Structure formats: C-alpha cells, structure tokens
Length: 342
Image (cartoon, rainbow, N blue to C red; front, side, top):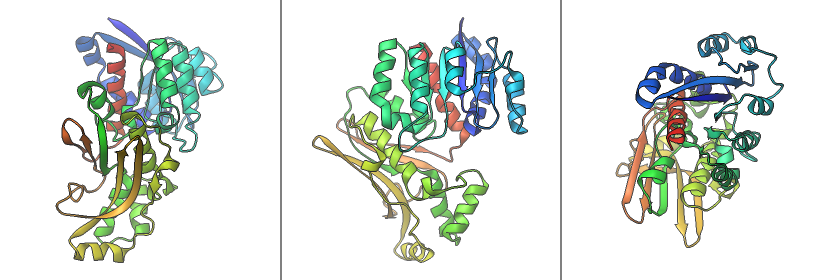
C-alpha cells in the first residue's frame, strides 16, 4: 500500500470537485490501486490557507468553502503566509495547481509547479498558462527530478488528449488540428440561434457559472487561443504563445449574422485550428460559418470537439459532451494515477 500526501493550490469549483472525487474514490483507490492519500495543505484565494501534516478533513473543508467561511480553522498549526510557503512546508508528494490562468506570463502557477518539482513532487495542473509559457522548462525539470509534470485538464477538461498522444499514439506526427475548444462561446452562439442577443446569451452563461464576470477571455477568443497554443506547443513541439495565434472572437457577430447563416443552411462556430507547414505552425481562432457536412455543425451548447490529422491515422476526432468542473477534476485525478503508477 502506497500513501501520498497531496497539496491543493486553488479550491474553487474545480478544486472542490477534485476533493469530492478523492472522497468518493477513496475505497477504489485502496482496493484497486493499493493507494491511500491525505491532503496536507490547501491554499485558496478567498477562503484562506490550511495546513495539517496529518491530513486535512476534506469534508469539513468543503462545507466551510460552501458557506464562504475560512478553512484556516482546520489548520493544526498557524498556516503558511502564502501558497509558495505552503508548498515548501507541507511535505507533499503531489501538487495540484489550479490557480487562475494568466494568459500573458503563466505566473504564479509556473513558480508553484517548479517549486514543487524541485522538492520532489509530481506536479499536476489544470492551468493553461504554465503549459504555454514554460512547458519545456517544467518538463525538463520533472525529468531531472524523476517526477511527472502532467496537465490533461488544460484542454477539453478530462478528455484524454495529451495522454492519447503520449501513451497511445507513439510515433504519430500531428499535421493539423481543427475544432471547437471554448464551450462558453459555443453555448452563447447556440443561445443566439434560439433568438437571444449576444448580451442576453452572455448573461445566461454567467448565470450558470460557465462565463466569468468579465467574459472577455472567452468572447474575445483568448481562452481558445491559449488552448491552441498549448496543443501546438506540446503535440507539435513548436512553442506558440497566444499572441502568435491569429485571433478573432465572437463579439462582432450579430443576430442578423445568425439569421443569415440559418438561411444559407450554416451555423456560426468559433473555430480553432493549427497546421504544420514546413517547420512552422500556423494557428488561428476565428468565427466561421460551417455547413451541415462539417462535424462542427452539430456541436451544440457547452460540448467541445477536436479533429486531429496525423501522418499515420488520417483523421481522428474526440468529442466531450457538456463538460463541467467534475470532468476537469477527473482529468486531474487521472493525471495523479498516471503519475504515481509510472
């Protein structure tokens, strides 16, 4: 039986879903995988920091967070003053890094992950920033430490994209990709087809927790661009920043545009694409009108899809229907199991 101490940076919707998953899978981890685990540290942006070397009561932490209370009362001793100090002091084996994404620099997540790796932890994240801005640095550091840097949940939540190429498609060369990777904009466009304005659709997405208070990251294409950057950087081995992506969001699409597309038998989609030409990768995020013969035509609501073109399998598609914090949490959980078993 192997025991692992875990530290969680970020305890929002995804972090709390991960905590629920760890609790629900506790017996399965023990009996099927011969694994037990304890969360020794949690750092949050709004609920404080908790540290207990003997393990934090996860159920109590979830109840406190749901009430908006501080989790510091669960600390066995005065908690560290910030997340980096928590990582240094929690004696963990695995870091789950789920702080808010920074499109421009990837910080402070990069520092969280590199600190954990230097201390001998596996480093797992749902944060796209470090993948785009420090993939090679963190991968090389993980290899030098004999640990894993995994990030399955950064694109399409828990759908196996990075692990698919890492494990199941050895020797396959990715030539191009095309898909719908931002579920918020896809939901907005679907609602607009039903008669809502752009503003009404955004408000609906915000009301169900899909869109942020400031929706610009989704509506202006930044979230889609950083996902394309992550895919190109990892799967095509060509470092690409969001600023390198030819980017246009959906803000300019009007109700008249939606109606005109319907008349032509088409639908508007925010399409993400990347293509290898020679030694370069050309990436684009932009609204397109797609016909019914396109696999993107039938992707509605918060569903995401991606189609890969490789040199050995031709076209290969993955679709994830209506993802949420639970599916993102599963991606983190799967990364944990893959890291410790390897």
